[in-house]
Length: 108
Image: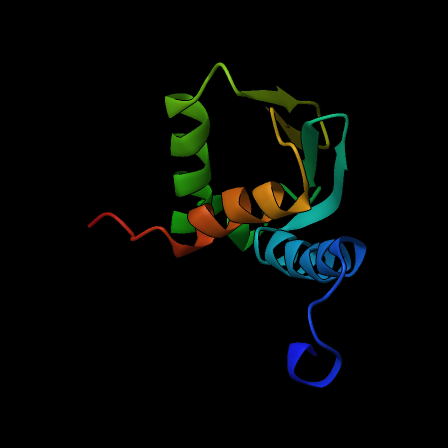
């Protein structure tokens, strides 16, 4: 896009980052994601038997939450896991948080 049209305006960059964020969220079994008022809310897949909950990626996510308990909050209901992250200023920052979970090396 930059080669053809030049530097992208801020809203266009945010739109592209939103698409990237949604793709990362899907890889983390997130059914719904909301980024608003410097808060990101992740609503995870409802199926408790999902392979995701047994994966290394889920373990990385839980480790991140435990290591940053002031920033992240976990809420578990009968049918849904929700994780809230504070101080998420924009879509780029939300994308970086999810990307760090997916790209973090697995522990052996």
